[in-house]
Image (cartoon, rainbow over all chains, first blue to last red; front, side, top):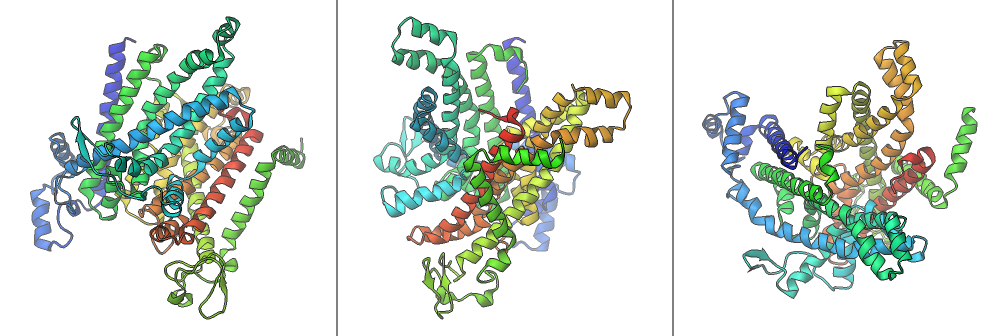
Length: 327
Length: 294
């Protein structure tokens, strides 16, 4: 399969996924729930409900309503929030930079700590430190995110009082990007939630690096490098690391989406003003237009991220393209 | 080999790991504590008549105001004994996790058997759905369903099942594809046995070791997922508090140093999840070493 056909088929799958998502969300929130609830104030009287039903065309057949929903969605109109009185999509987009910032810091922490730890565990699998690292990664896998978050708050905010337990530092615009990382206070705020969010990916990267390292050490090119008398530093730093990086780059790409999903939990614990916290607030307040907007935004984001990860992977490793649509 | 002999062989293989043996004992204690919660609890934590607001937020080991008893792990904001609350919460958490896993196993197994055995377009369609769902994290799938269905115990179980059935479907399909290469399946074709008999009497038993291992691992993640949903306030209702809800209730008091309201339910959750994981890991090594990932 040629590169362009491959990309086209992946893009087509992405569009399909978004279409299916929109159908599910539509059926779920518009058809199963009482659709009028989405648009009228819960305190509205009978006459207003009837008026809204007619105005929204809810007496029309379902497929026609779906067409209407898609038409409006394509123009970026996903309804108005009941609670905030603003465009639902706008609310999501407004909080997106905070979530992105948290996720980026988290993935950076996971990579910066994970690769050296994984290398260590891979080079010395039987040492005490190596076993300790692997044991830690198993614990990191099985601990629920919210529990770790609570423990971080208990230790670092309540007992030691080193870092704040909630909120985000002052936001400023740097090079056109909204960020709180320009100040020390911003970093103090982001550290605990980012560490919390990073833990699962950290465990994953440690394990990937470890198995990649162990695999590389048995390869001929490493043995040849040894025979050539290269320093251990060069063998590990260049030859082993290169072999390890390909799967890690892919995993970072593919796991970034799940990082955004898990930020729902972390943002709620640390009162981080991102879109995940907005989702939970909207679910509990029955602010359905915002829930719809979140789901559609995340679906599009997911498809875009997976597409980019696929693209990066097929550029790094040409064998993948031959596999066609295998996932 | 007779059944008792293979069972004792299984036990001796399992006992080779000290950690896993300890975990199995801990897990049995946790299960017993959950089953016997009404008997073991010093008070009925949801009988308001037994609660005394004057005893609210007492630290662990405090005596009750009327001197009748001691609160071993302290009390919560309503003066509820934490030991009793945790035992009942554990019961709810385990019940929901096991129930969800059972349904998810049933649905996933049928889908996996059908997809793997029949192959072709049906297989391609089913696996495309499975792939699509697995590309979204379980927590997101569960949140979407909660947002659509609303809250409540049945709805949480539905959300957990929806978030997890795809794992079983994919795993079982993999096993079926391998089994279908074996001679006994060719024999069933020659004998023209009915399809249901091939699927459920011949293929299913050969999927059991895999199902037990994956199921055991997934019970732990079902429990963790339910706890997460309840902690976020979108899971179980306040009338049936699981461990996650207990932890959420204590969260506000944690910042003022009253750690026990959240900490001990969290510890109970942790011990449960870790012991299930350790037992499941050992089961995998004993029953089906092929599944070992690392």
